[in-house]
Length: 282
Image (cartoon, rainbow, N blue to C red):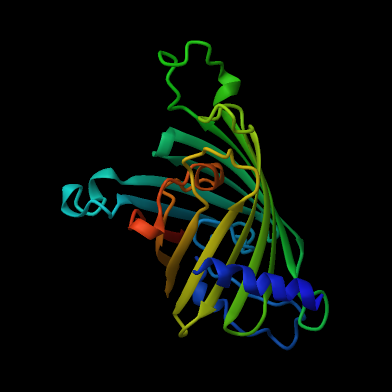
C-alpha cells in the first residue's frame, strides 16, 4: 500500500502540474467515517474527478477553451479560435450520475454515466473509487471527404476507473486508468482502441483557492503520431453556489477521447490553450 501511494504522489509531480458548494467543508465530520471533498469540481482539469452530483441535483457546466496563445495578437491570444462545451449532469442518487453534453470541438454530442464503487473512510478503506463511462457522436465527420462513412464510424467510447485519496486536509490525488475507443481515427496506423493512465492532484491554497493539475500518459500511440500527452495546470475558485476553474492545457478538446487522443499543443514552445470550467447547481 505504501508503494502504491508513493507512485500516486509522484506521478502528478513528475508531470508538473440549490445547495452551497462551500457547505462541503474540507474536514471529515466526527459522526461519519466517510472522507468528503477530495475534489470540489467534477473535473480536476481535463480528467474526471471522483466528485459526484448529489441526489436530485442538476449541475450545469460551461467549459470554454480558447485557441492557442502562441500566435499572440494574430488570433487575439486564442480568442478567435475558441471552442465551448455545455454539460448537464443529474444526480439520480448520491452515488450515480448521468450526463449529456455538446461540444463545438468536432460538434460532439456525448452521454455519460458516473457511479461510485467505494468511498474513502477516515479509519477504514483508503480510497474513493468511481467508474465513468461515456459514448460520443462526432457529427463533424464529412461524408464528402469520407464517402464510405457510416453512422457507426462517428461513435466513440470511454471507460475509466477513478481512484482518489484525500491525503490530508490540503492534498488530494487521483489515478485514472482509461480505455477509449474511436471507430474512426485520423492516423492510419493508430489503433482504434487506445489506453492511457491519468494522474492528477488538488492542493488547497486557501479556503476558496486550490491548485489543480492533471496529466495523461498515452500507452499505445502510433510512433509517427503528431499528438501529445495532455498536461493541464489550473486554479479552482469556490464562490457560493459554483466552482470556477481556470487553467492552461496543451489540449483544446474537452471530452476524454479528444484530450487524450488528439492533444496538439506543446508546452515547450508555448503552444498551449487557456480555458475555464464554470459550474452551477440547480
